[in-house]
Image 1 (tube, one colour):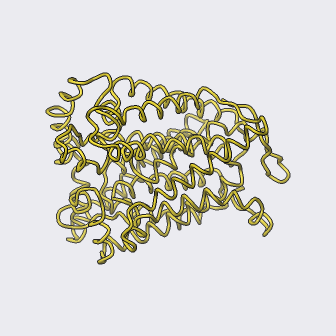
Image 2: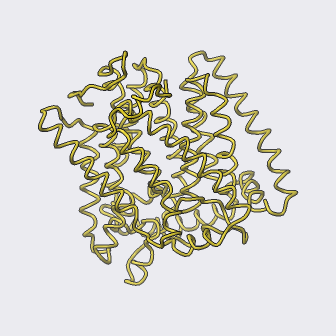
Length: 449
């Protein structure tokens, strides 16, 4: 059960609240930034997470209950390689390299946190915090699109990204409390896929799922991030497939899902065409009809063909260093006359920054992690943990689809949540084996995958 019954359950293991609270704070970072003017609040969260991980690993070592698995070694190799690339001659300063490292590779600490510091109680609390936070964030995003305030425009001014990212056709795109519309979009994809997984596993919560999901779908549309719309559809298909053992039932559910998407899409297309305030959404939907001819896609294709691929060919093996394609870091490189790229693709970003070697390590690591999660998913019996691994696989599919047109693993805090969920999912079977089914308290486990 997702619900934790009884007051004692909520006060039990107060440390299990630490991670959910930090993730919640990270989700509201944009609003805090706009109010205080301080851009580096997430660094405090990073420091807290690093301290949490360090303390947990030291405690496990002292109890002789800690052992590294192949997935841990792979993640650590990639992080070390990315750290080494900070000293690439193309990187203009140590600050630029560290910021680039923090945006992408450093967030893999979430993978270790998920694998070694998260128990069933933490999972429940994290899910509850995400569901409540996403509902509030979605409502603010809707308000923001309809009636933007001075506070919203202040956040745009404080952003390191381009103003055009926030404005489309002269109209603000929803980004709510996060750092940009793409950040909000992929965040809502993650929470909507979580809601869909809950819908399948816990029928008693379906009404709540509908109530929580409706504003999230509306806010996702108002981000006008088409890649995230596609990510939700693909992730939803994965959820349907994972929850269907009967081939005929799979086909019927896919047909029903496709029919609902088409009907809602056609209705939204005509509705947005009739309301001037929704013109940006209408334009985004028009682009879906012919994606390769959409203005934003044409720009990306030309950029890849004419600029980025030729640059990669000049320096293919080790790339241009950590941060040379990092989101919002162009200023460091332009002022120092160094090579920088707006990658618009997570795999192009990796090969541009870390070269062929870095891309191979990254792809192998992803394949091993997803293979392990798939393997674990097949042997689970606990409904909560099975739902979690379903979410992990669907979330990964959505992230990869969204990453085809954006460096989505730079999007904070979704990248951190992504690695945490994959970390927990990869060890879900060990969690299930160590859970006392009477009181649901997790005992320490020394085995690793």
